[in-house]
Amino acid sequence: MIIKTLDIKNFRNYEYLTLELNDKINIIYGQNGQGKTNLLESIYLLGFTNSHRSFTSDTLIKSGEDKAIIKGKLIKDIPYNLEIEINKTKKQVKIDDKIINKITDYIEKMNVIIFSSEDLDLIKGSPSERRKYFNLELSQLSINYYSALNDFNKLLKLRNEYLKELNQNIPIDLNYFHILTDYLINKSVFIYQMRNKFVEKLNKICPPIFKEIANIEGFNIKYHPSIELENFDKETIKKALDDAYNNYLEKEIRLKSTLFGPHRDDFTFNIENNNLREFGSQGQQKMAVIALKLSEIEVFKDFKQTSPIILLDDVFSDLDNKKKNNLLKYIKGDMQVIITTTDLDSIDKSLLTKAKLIHIANGQILEKEVEK
Ligand SMILES: Nc1ncnc2c1ncn2[C@@H]1O[C@H](COP(=O)(O)OP(=O)(O)OP(=O)(O)O)[C@@H](O)[C@H]1O
Ligand SMILES: [Mg+2]
Image (cartoon, rainbow, N blue to C red; front, side):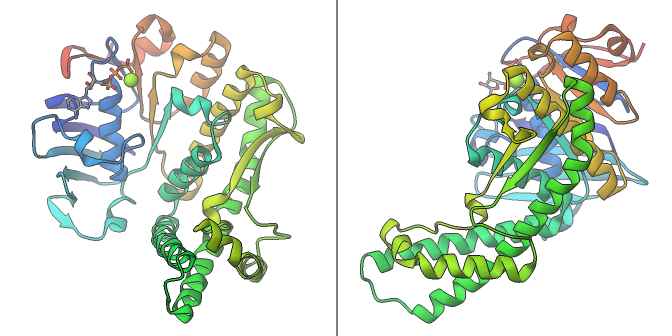
């Protein structure tokens, strides 16, 4: 999948920008605070409709303006145009100038993997960051996961409101509460199964990549659901959740919160049985995330039969030469890659000569150098 052109209007610090992209490697460079990340964010948003960093429309729209528009011409088998318009209150998406009302029909069209230096902290970060990460990746891979997660979040919010009312002794329809819990369990089953499947798949691809990068055997990712599960069969998950909700209802009422479910899961990255979070060096943690990201590309290709567009936000400056070269080896293939950096010197020469260089300053393109 390739994005050929990008048009931005009133997005972040961009008033207007139109950009042609190279099919392979693009390097966006410029000083701090000039709009490099914003540019990648616009591409991510065009594909996924949500930003990877901020979820309020206000911050996405250029200060003082009412709406932001991002357009892109994409090529998969046949070319098509995507467009997203962001208002203060809503987002509207179009494919080939036709308004698409069902968001799930839209976000399947473009696949993007973003890799930013914050990702390198995934292992050190909190469980909620790891859940967010897995949710984003799975949502891109499976529209059904995206829908199930949205439904789950709505049901969870409702259930928590009921728990709050029970806590305050407000009489509620308990039948309804139990039906709601059943719905929540049904959505959870699917989420658990998908997370497990994804981790299983990653565990096939990731360890050899980690071995190659870090020269250490035994890398694995473990999925830790918030309830104990012997397996991921539908009935097993249903029963475990049902038992947990029955046994701990009083505690849930006391704490006014749903204590079990996919919103409480975690994932660990390990060498054999040692969690890299506690045992790994910083370098090993970073290499694990790189291996994870690189595996993701493979999973995408497998699931979607096309390469995703790869966005690398300032990851090179954080890595030593060896890690850099290993990362490069994997991304040099047939994928479109868009890289940002403040320092062109941090980029491998062989990459520079093949790349389209785009110099950004204060939300504008300063100069362009076409493919050499
Ligand atoms: N809604 C907005 N309206 C106007 N400007 C904005 C808006 N949101 C962010 N900005 C500006 O965008 C700039 C930051 O852009 P961005 O994060 O893309 O920088 P960057 O080039 O990636 O920098 P760095 O190298 O430090 O990562 C800041 O100057 C910020 O004030
Ligand atoms: Mg940045």
